[in-house]
Image (cartoon, helix red, strand yellow):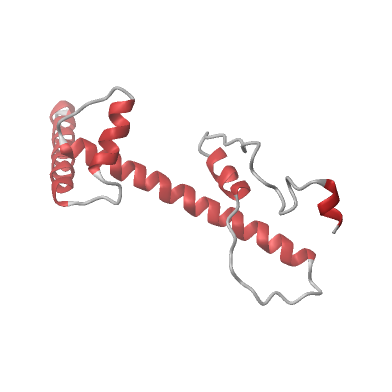
Length: 136
């Protein structure tokens, strides 16, 4: 058995699969428009006339956003279930989930993206009000 030949056949299959995948991107319209991807790639100094590569970046970006959103949803559910447990005596009729920057920040942190809140973010409705109006 020739191991070199077996290795080349496996590589050929991988190359064929990659070629087929790249060709399929020509018929696929990603959620993120090509022009937006091209804009941000150009801002980072990358230019490529091959629309397949642009769409590959769009698909990868779309997958990343979906994973972050899913993780943020899990953070939100965990946080809200902890709040419900703390308030066992009250019936929670409203089952809506409220996604916060804290949920999103925790999800992004898992991917190595640290989000810092800007100074103008209000942590409560009374933030920024003068002390006299808070007492009313």
